[in-house]
Image 1 (spheres, rainbow, N blue to C red):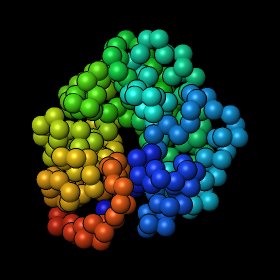
Image 2: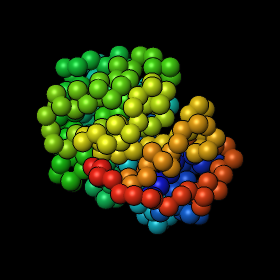
Image 3: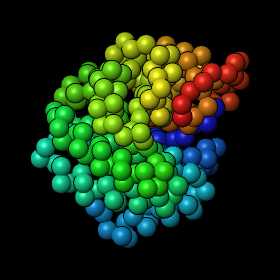
Image 4: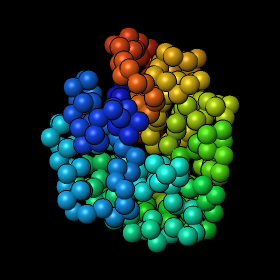
Length: 255
């Protein structure tokens, strides 16, 4: 199993630029981030410092969000009409960072109260830009309990948007925690032909694997793509990784 650490939710006791090295010291070779800057278009020095932190830590950047406003309670800008220009200004920056670091997955959160027309236009533009670096653009379903204004709260809602965009490199971000909270069929979500990346946290509680009731080893048995660790754990106890069972059979997944 290939795990990467989401350094926007784990190692948060450290400054952001120190987190990739902390993930490496904890035994991980890859990381992912929500949008790591305060601005949609940060300065060159900020971007270079972020890239240096990843490279100097010796880890791979697996996933990166486009500008998302999560720190301010937002859930992305893709479908928010008043933020179309801000999102579009961000595309080249995010794709540029991903290109320099070999990152091949960019998450485009739909946005609270996001609307279809701007979302489809923005996703299509982002997909065309991402295709230049052989990357996919991800569309994620969240849960309605923690994100009541977010329109995409089911596999069908997210994949309907992906199909409407009509670009071959727009894929589904399968977050098992959010989908579990919504009562979705998790094996079916993992096996969906549009699934392009997986994130996990246990449910209930959004804690590390083993703190809730999700049978994560069973669910992920046979999955060969990267699995993002997007859970909360102030103790940073990664002992569960060494106890993760070996795969018992092979399955076909798109990663």
